[in-house]
Amino acid sequence: MNLWSTVDAQRAAVADLLDSLEPGDWQQPSLCGRWTVREVAAHLTLQRMGLRDMLARTPIILRAKGDLDRAVHDMAVARAREAGDAELVALIRASIGSRRPNLGVTRYETLTDILVHTQDIAIPLGRTVAMPADAAAAAATRMMTMHWPRPFPIRRTLRHYTLRATDTDWGTGTGPLVEGPMSALLLLVCGRLVALDRLRGDGVAALSAG
Image 1: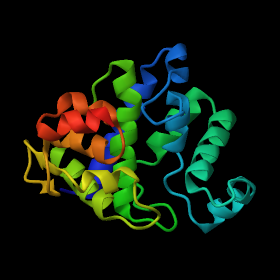
Image 2 (image 1 turned 45 degrees about the vertical axis):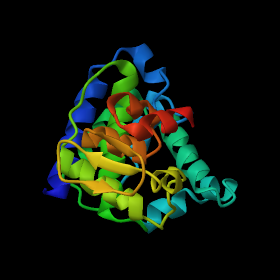
Image 3 (image 1 turned 45 degrees about the horizontal axis):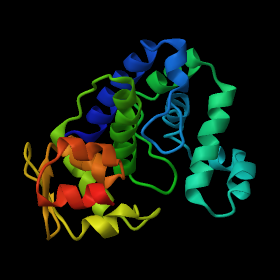
């Protein structure tokens, strides 16, 4: 897998998807918690921030009082208010070819962001954007082993299950089996329980029950 080529292909795909939306689609809820489709799109324009960019957003970061999720959300909301729909799409297209991740994270976070957030937009709108299995496997491995910026809370739960892909050579954990397409497993690893509908095994019912 060429990581950056995959990132570029996904950036182009999500930009094409956004270009095809009706005005009302932008305000629909995404799969990403309390974020709208528009706010997720705005977040995807903030994937190349260096020190200067971070410093410019110091007031937002300070208001978050150490809550990284809140800071990330509030930066996306601010960008969504600043930019129109066409500008958000143009900014995502302008990022194609960039090889710079955000300050303090690796290229694997950039890969995970574009893979998962593309689905956060597409799935609730009934759209389909393909996710390469090898790229999803690399992202899921990173998510299951990441300690910085912070581990996903669901990781502690998923370590008690065997996760196994049916379309690529990837697996992790011990316990009741959860298996299926690698794209669905990545969404699960990133806390999107909607992916359970595409998975099977003894562990699915337990995860569904919460």
